[in-house]
Length: 478
Image 1 (spheres, rainbow, N blue to C red):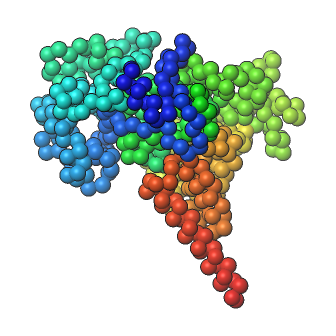
Image 2: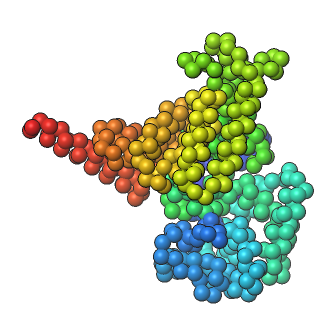
Image 3: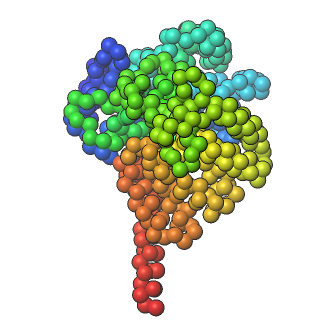
């Protein structure tokens, strides 16, 4: 790792190892909000292609796609992306073309990524693809794998490794090593997203993977195409550890801990998680994932009675019967099952509105569960172009986003942007300007200012301001 350490030094970074965390990335100088800490191209990556949706292997675009005529697995949007990938795909294409049609259906994005991993190693060993301190297979070997996994998962990795070995047809391949690399994918691969955090594919970024998790991170990972970019979202003093979040942070400590344990096999000890069991943490958990007081005028949160028969409001003392909550929860589940399987948007919107109505009766106004239902409602209303209703729902989500996300979280900025676009569409220019401004204040920190996405947002803000000035001058003239 000496070469990597030397490569990180000019970037103001250093590697360190802690007994409880393993390798960590530390700031060797001060970093400030919006500053790029580190960026990296993927060692290997694949788009999230399925039977119903395909993306370009080079840029992950869905436009103007043509399937590779030889392997019939990979898609490209044009010659530039095909040339970009050709050194690697030339080998992959030959291997995939040898598979029969049924076997090709088994080549999932994860299988493809593993095949590409070994082919890239082969090309780097043969000096066809250059090796650098930030781009070499040794970095993949150094990644932590999931050593404590159950027998069922081990069997699955072994089956996947056998398929990879069948495709590669390399004489010295180690099935056990391939299986171990699948476990490395599970806890090190990143979901590549667009600027609005919608998933596009999966990539392995061995240096970015050194950055540890915090539920209150000081940095954020955003993708510019396939390039992973980590920016500071708060001041990071020299000698401090750089951290990002691996999981959704808008959740109770117990939920976050459970997700991290199941997916990454560690227990988080960040400043938020260290409050587990303290009054503030109990209160926050009860608000985010618990029930509301039956007095609609009370904003209190509920905790279980000692006899387990009901829930007591911690503000006014009213007791809510457990059976009443169980009945409403059962009705919500029945509607949710029906809504999730509905293929009709009009039917789905009615079902989700009924779910929201019931959830408002039982969950706290700042409940994450209620928020997720409203996000689903917003998504469907946007698809149906029901703009007024969509704006009403979007406005309801803003106070919850402001509570559950820190000030420089990209999801908060994106929600301001979405709401601003709806306000502007419906003629509420002044409100749109306020929301666009709030979005810019956050997203210039998380996304920078030079990407097409940010340029579009800044242009919308300027256009809205120009429109507001025109309206003002028109009123003054009249």
